[in-house]
Length: 126
Length: 185
Image 1 (cartoon, chains in turn green, red):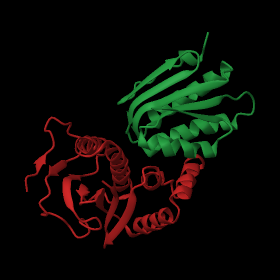
Image 2 (image 1 turned 180 degrees about the horizontal axis):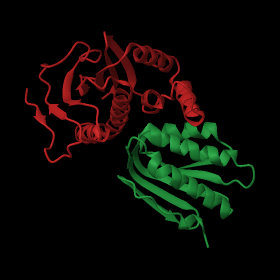
Image 3 (image 1 turned 90 degrees about the horizontal axis):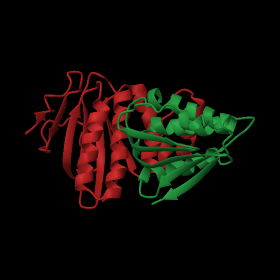
Image 4 (image 1 turned 45 degrees about the vertical axis):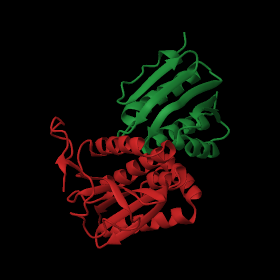
């Protein structure tokens, strides 16, 4: 059984989260709370751990519906990329699905790519 | 001045918000610097639970209604990060004023608050780095957000400058700090 799809989704204000087997997580809405790590850091870590346990070759994180996030939330995506990058054994590609129509996503994920390009992939949707 | 308190049904822990069409009254030295034009919106808030989320939601809704989509998105990021900075680093004993300003060609968000001298120096230095090379500073702050360090990462203003391409200006009058983030309409 897929551990990835069994990861408990947190109840977070203003954001909808959907985990789909075998390897997709979709986030939509906005992240504006001062410390989003309280809701999301553990969740992202659980997805990462499950992806390793399932020996996934790729995780698709669809953030195209995230219309606004604060800088604390961007740090969470940086953290996730760093966990993958620092894995010594099995690694997977973390593919962020982003929207061309959402201003903040264009630059942030390009910058993130430059920090961890060996483990990240970007896919753009309109 | 036709100000009014926020919805009285708000929780008692919510910050005090006063929203008014701009009349020019009640401004303090430093509140009206840099981008000159008409204030579309003026919000005065005090630090407290929910100050950031409530005010940002209000400003975002207003910009979405009154400005074209891409500009509204950029100003939404600017408003959030400037206000977040003011709440995190400003004096808790003074009001924070956030305004949405427009001129014929430009539109911007302006946040004014009181701060201590050390904070003002740090802010001045950070803005100088951003003016010199916004992209490099953004990447540095992104890296520092992973490794931590002192002073704490200042990714917010780097986002405003590099990610959404707003021009940042800083005005200081004694302890009153005014930061404006603006772009073409």
